[in-house]
Image 1: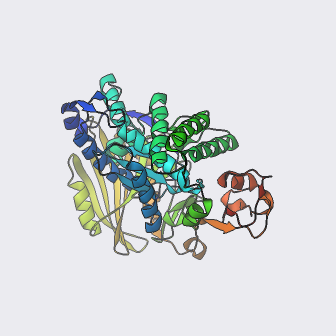
Image 2: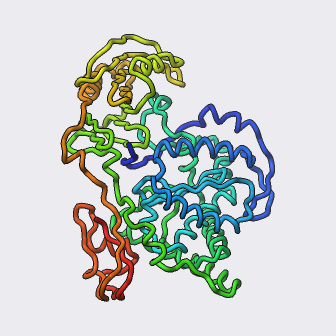
Image 3: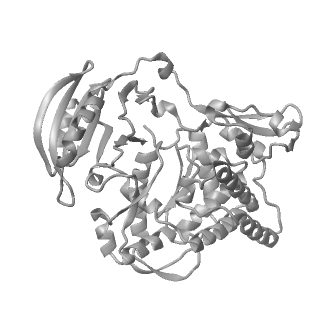
Length: 485
């Protein structure tokens, strides 16, 4: 189960479990990036603890890309760059997230993330070093911690991804801490400073930081092709326009100061590492087609109500009604169906109205109807099914308030009782698209050397952007190029 829907922002007051952190006012701390003292609500230890909580929740949303070689390589470059940051407060963590979106972000406590979607659009180690240096800069300069502090003083609360109505929100198990911190918007001054720090750190680590400007050109080309801003990137970063010149200028200044001798610019080193990386959505982790959610790896399926939004996360699937007044959550639970049902109904604020045993398409199940007390004092009615299949317990919850539950009851029942084994051979055998890195056997014009893939949405222009090339650009023999198979 993986994230596949557009992240939206909506307001949410500071969650209660962060309140002890808020009360522990830390006063002044020295900023590792500037050497200046500044007032923060979060001490270094607070940032470390908050980052650890956020990291666990971010992983539950996106999941780690399961390729140890790529994970190790990103960490290796990250630590080379980190060594020049002067930030010794945290034991930094570098992760590659299993997401097709083009994004990188940082959380307090030294947690740095890049997506496999971003890695596919880079050309060399120097570009990766610049991206990692930029995110390290956010942590070293306390940008997240300062934005958190400012948001508390302004009493504007935090933000969490998802178009979900307030009464349901406390029961969704969403990555509140991680996504709240992720969507604390940085100021342009923050971004400029992180660009400057990223150039400094990457250059001192021996990388040609000016290469980072090419990535921002790629973002701009993608934005122009789509006709809109890149939603996942611009939620944490400003528009890439004008950043290219500033990065090149700063990189040249550092290069002159060091006397040259910088590297990491060879595509023939970088590109073979990302050969065969999953490109785009991975259907093995679940996908929607013709009104049905399929999961080939776990071999199950269930219907999706018409016009409901679907969020496919690493640990759950959420479906939200068009009016945003009802939601279903599909996840897993340990043990047996009876044990999972008992664990749910024994939770705080939950009143059991009905419990029965059922058989759902050959699988034993427990059906529950409960009232759940919300954090704000309101009540939700919940229909739940706990279904055993292949040593797993699959759990459905359908939430709505009492006045609207009746209008959604049949929808919930239809989804939950039509959970079934996936047997369609064509669905079971579906595979993701992957990046195909190859060397040209002869020179020629770019558009004559690559094969478009309409099924993957990759025409010649898209491939040119992917390769940081122009369609009519001459390409020499033996050049490494990327296409999608």
